[in-house]
Every structure is written in structure tokens, then in C-alpha cells.
Figure 1 (cartoon, helix red, strand yellow):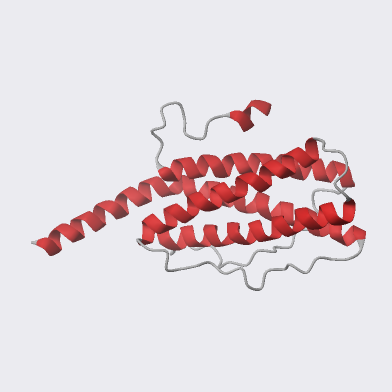
Figure 2 (tube, one colour; figure 1 turned 90 degrees about the vertical axis):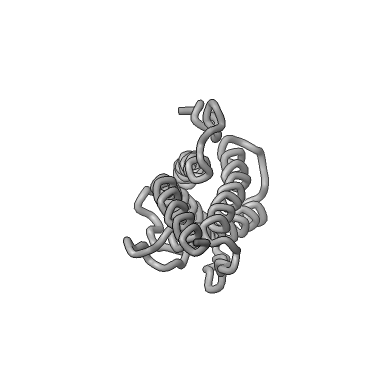
Length: 198
């Protein structure tokens, strides 16, 4: 499994579609975040069922959502995750000290660096799906009030990691379904343009 983090996101011939590349990046982030969660759980002696409450606020999933809305939902959630993750890492380093850099710190750094790449990818897909960037996902109402006592801080950091893990998996699943949907919508848009030109 260690080889997974070094595999190419573009595939062997670079011919993957943009949604497939974004899905591969989301899958890689999910794998790395799962590892980060496991390392943190072992470090802090937490059980898996700790901290199951959602922190990110987006509309619920629906089969009625079109491609643009699905992308907006994922993009918005990932932006919120990024804000939470930045705050969690900064607070963890401030309160718990930087200390020696080990596997946990390296994995945390990797997750923090990879998340903006996925956000960029979903942003580009969103722009392609809607033609503009008129909808800007909001991070208002995000739970950025960090606890002051040490145990609650560790629990909050763990919840943040679980959110990134959850949303990277959700992004993977959503993005894997997009290539066929985008092709169908492009075909429909092209036909509509041709019929208006006649």
C-alpha cells in the first residue's frame, strides 16, 4: 500500500479526462487522510467511533442535483475542509508544539498540501460545467472556534481529519460518476447551439 502514494495521477499515457484525474487525486487524498487518521488515533489512543458529528455544512445530496450542483457541493465542502485543516494544523503546532518530525507530521503536511490541489481541480470542473465562476462557495458558519482545553483540542483536530477524510471519499465517488454525465451534457449543449444557429 505504500506504493499507492507515489502512483501517477495522470495515468500512464496522460489521456484521462479532467474528472477522472480529479477523482484519482481525491482517491489519493482519501487514502492519505485515512492513514493520517489512523496515525492520530494511535498517537492519542482514540477509538474509531469518537467524534462523528459533521463540521462542514452543505446541502444534502440528492439525485435531483445536476452536474454543476454536485460539483458546487463538493467544491464548497472541500473549501470548508481546507479552512478547518489550516486552523487545526496551526493550533496543533501552537498548543502541542512542533517537536520532532515523524510519520504523523509528514502525513499531515502531505494531506495539507494535497487538499488545495483537489480544490483547484474541482474549481476548474465547476467552471467548465457552468461556464463562469458565478457561484462562490461560502465558508460562513464554519466551526472555527477551537477549544482551549487540551483534550477537547485533540478531539476537535480529530474531527477535522475525519471531515477531510469523509469529503475526499465523497469527492472520489461523485467525480467518478461525472465523465459520462459531462459528455452527455456537452452533447446536449452542442446540439442546442447547433439548433439555434439554423
